[in-house]
Image (cartoon, rainbow, N blue to C red):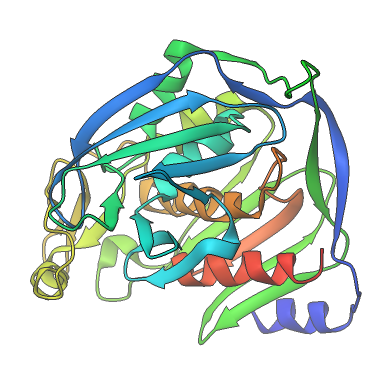
Length: 314
């Protein structure tokens, strides 16, 4: 990682991002999606309805008629998830849903959430099996269509191309990105206390939406069994179980086999990263940068810092 940082420091630029046409038109869903499920942290039920939206609108949440754009401008740091907040209302655990929307090319949509929590100012997106697979299947079922603006015209879909190297870091966690003509993501994890999670990597090139749907979306979130009680005492993962997470033990290894792929934990980190970096999208654009991205021991907070670094210079 020292070599990466040294290489980055050799390049300085006042503009990191160039917004370029993808040669495609912005899309939305072809009908309403409705799904109800248990949430990970509160353990309650919530219903999500995803509606088609006009081109140029982008993606946004509608909770109690408060419209919260899926933008880094409204992201706040929260433990073990990504939260969006506006005017005192918040939506938690948005990363898997946003990852599915970004990964399948849903550029514009309204995401309505019906709250079943006793707290009427906060809601959480259902966790389902801990992956983005159910969201992708629901999107595939209704299909996509070209989004039109209020004048009945389609809009060009643009993507952010990285022009100069950039990195963010905290301790030994780092995200580095380099200019490229295509999007490549390499993600490494290292949980030294769990032999099955020591220094694992997965690398991927994003050529089509089908790659995301087949290779990334089915990957489930994971946890270390010995840390579960501490997280629950902190008011987290009340809805967590072996049905919505891959569970590893420091002494016994994988407790609920099989894995869906040998690199499932690393693939899930890429899933989370795509959901978090989708907050860079604006006005129906692509959020995921076209770049060669290398992440090591990252998490939601570092992902958000990476997006803010891009936003500050674009």
